[in-house]
Image (cartoon, rainbow, N blue to C red; front, top):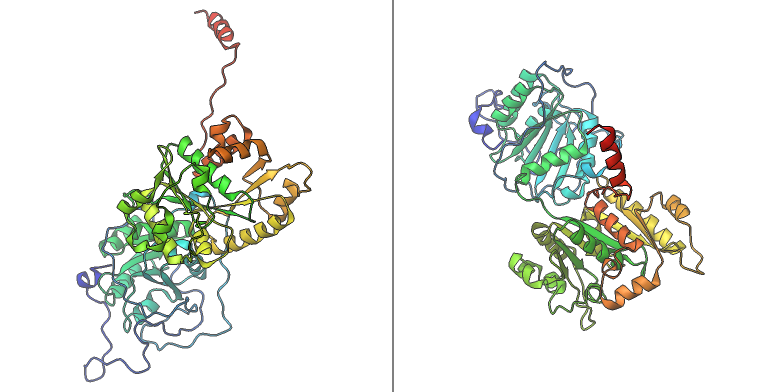
Length: 520
């Protein structure tokens, strides 16, 4: 809504005193950049929605608009409490009832197709809803990892509350407004909101009428997008992503984080072999980022000894660009590159979450797939890498300590990533002779997660591959574990393996028999 204020004059006059002079802001008015207190939610606001005969056939592409400056940097952290709709924009605000709380958002199973959208920049988003279900969806979306850099606040009150509030406060980068009105009333509400909107502010309108004429009318007035309820978090995240990321540009790379439930579980082995299978199976560029700087084994597993690596990028993240990245990467094959760890103890490595974010963002922009080999540590930066990754793979051994740690990791990451796929589980070294272990069925039941792969113990094969600096598929392509890594690679990249029809020895004979029966 960057030019709405200039195109359409306000429909409601400014507040004036009896003498005709514009009234100055009173001391009790809200301070710009801070949300005022509002009364508790009241149900039943707005006219009932009636769908006209002409409907929107599908979601339209949003209008390209310039990004807005960060105008509400002083906004306090944390989402504000839900507030009630305002009957009139001239009514004074009333403190909310502390006994009223929003209901918990309804969660549904997440599929791979639902995990869409890209990271949003550092912007301020303010939403004004009329229906509590819509507010719950927005609150759930505000916890998404792709909005980690944004500040989101969700209020109740719809168009009236927004118009009243922005008379005395600057508008944020993005406003999300819900309206339950019909077409004409909604257009008038948008014009009224435009009169108090700053230039450069984007607006998304959420309505309950599937009307293509209304959509066109709103877009012509500078609205960035019109969404129709019912709406889920995935659809909302995709619309938000399209506003600030060019849908026609190359997609960002997918980050797959591999972590062990316990030291020695074999997470690095699973990471390296899966990355190799991705590069060889789908012929796509893959980078292995070894974040275990003092003890990383990626260089050893691929028989590489790079002079420079990921430590140089993490210690000076501001210098990392496409040119330096190409210099620091070590090429292992046509499609696989290595961001190797130094593997030395000549200094201590104190990583920061910001440095890891910078390195991962540069990799995302240049490589389709990034396999991150995480050490078995629990720090701010390791947690952030896990939460911000597109996929998380936990490798565990079938014993009690791994069981406990796996359960804790799955619960922690599922809560921190409510709109993403749950972590994947790989059980490693299953069936080791003379070792008591928890059965696969009991392990899966205890952590409430079915293993994505079960790798049987094979000391000869894995030991040979490790000592030779080779992958399992290079040592024995027909081994069962090699097939497991290929299937794991296809699953993590949302690919399906093409089924090849087996050629029977009797096929030529049967073909001739069918040929004769057809009379040819």
